[in-house]
Amino acid sequence: MKKERKFVVSVEKCSSYNPEKVRKALLRTLKNLSFSFKPGMRVLIKPNILAPHKPEDAVTTHPVVLEELCKILFENGVTEIYIGESSSYRTDLAFKVSGIEKLKKYGKIINFESQPKRFISIDNKLKIPLPRILFEVDLIINVSKLKTHELTQVTLCIKNLYGCVPGRMKENFHKVFQSEKKMSKLFFNLYKKISPGLNIIDGIVGLEGRGPGASGKPIKSKIIIASRDAAAADIIASEIMGFNPYSIYTNKFSEIKKEDIIPTGNAKDIRLNFEKPFSYISPFFREIYWMLPKSKIMFDYDKCTKCGLCGKKCPVGAITYHPFPRCNHRKCIKCLCCIEVCPNKAVYLEDPLIKKFIKWVLRKIRKV
Image 1 (cartoon, rainbow, N blue to C red):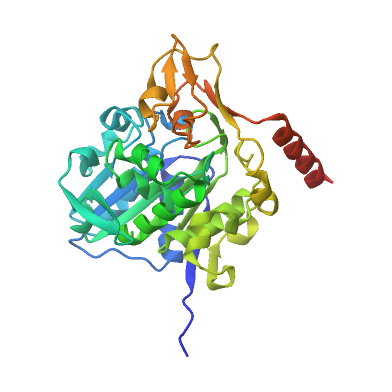
Image 2 (cartoon, rainbow, N blue to C red):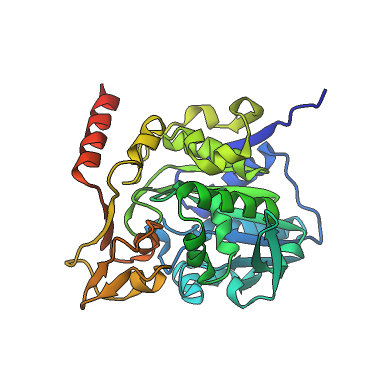
């Protein structure tokens, strides 16, 4: 009989980004996972750097987490460190604003968009160029952020690896995979190809509500979650956030059962109730809900600065300017890239009255 695999997930409390506290939490995490580094390893760290956001916005992986991780790597004889990302826009500026560029004293900062590529095959159909260095290092450490997401409900370890896809190609895939489920399947297939050996979630300060960008709200969640397996870490993280973990498609695709996960550290002590994304609906009602009239992309012109990012990032050209942005709702595919990149919280999803009523009823039921 085939032996069932078990997946260890570490959850450690960490009350702030004080370097010493972060260091201790990371060391406890590695001990919980019985994870060690071999001298002479070449290691690539993949943070979450969505766009040019300051660390206190809680949109990007905090530089203190990455710095303390780099120090631990050096202390264990790691000789080469790379920190790589392709953000939603202006990756080089995003490295600088997020504070991660300062970590170049520990290793090489890499913009994946300018790196040599290797094409990988997804389901023997789709060819995707990924940075060749992903397949040349000894270890990939995937350091994501504990955040909600308007399209996929959460963005954790598996979703973070989508940042390995270079440049505008990330938006263009939304034209091919025009649903939450199909995009999530792409994320999961990419994760299996990239195969990070260590997955860490920076949840010291997370992001709730209309994440994953500026429209979300920082929340002091005070945890670091980690596992050798990204899906196992995501299952525990999404449950801690207050979601049904198997309502998250990438968790479901992993086929990892809850009973196959061994939580360690403070996992049993922590339960948070993140404010859900605007698009969130109870899994029980999801199929019925999506048969109702569609929600629409709208704009708050009091907040809009006409920067043009929403239109530039729309993969189907549904947003035009007169001079403020307008959305052609017939062309819109609800990928929500415009909401994700808007730095001014000026783009939002507006539900029709029937959906608003259903959500209001469900909120009342949950409070009873």
